[in-house]
Amino acid sequence: MLKIFCILLSFFGLLPLVTQAAIYKWVDKDGEVHYSQQKPQNTKTEKIKVKTRAPEKSSTYSKPSLKQKEDEKQTSDKSTQNKTDTNKKPKKSAKERADLCKQSQANLQALTSRGRVRQKDEDGNVTYMSEDQKQQRIKREQDRVKQNCK
Image (cartoon, rainbow, N blue to C red; front, top):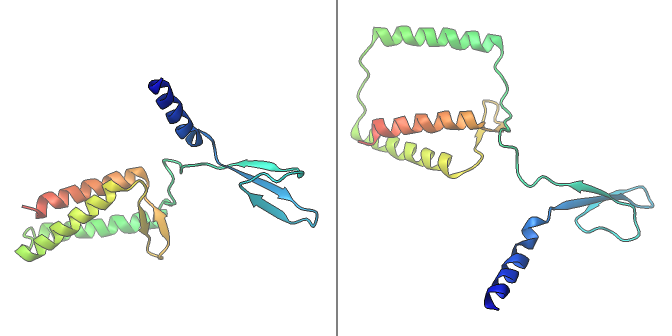
């Protein structure tokens, strides 16, 4: 008897999770459009289904133009020339490495503990990282942790 009671209790406890959220839309006699979660009585309504989670691969990333790609290539070519000229990198002090270690660990924690990650672009607009961008950033932060947290 207790088992049946527990099963029924858990069933009715989980029932609200199964129902889908809906929004009702209707137009009143004055021509105003209204939205509500409760269906009004004696009024013709339109049921609008609400998506309960965001799409997995949603990003506001826009592809760079050809000019931007050419500029990046020229910049990378110059930086590789500079690297060959000066193979020796200046060593970081222990304090700088400790600060970089803490920052990289914090970034890694933020990236792995959240679903969607926001970032600001050059214009200050907030965009969301795609899953591929997020994985690349996680890899980069893991490498920084290996370099600086010794």
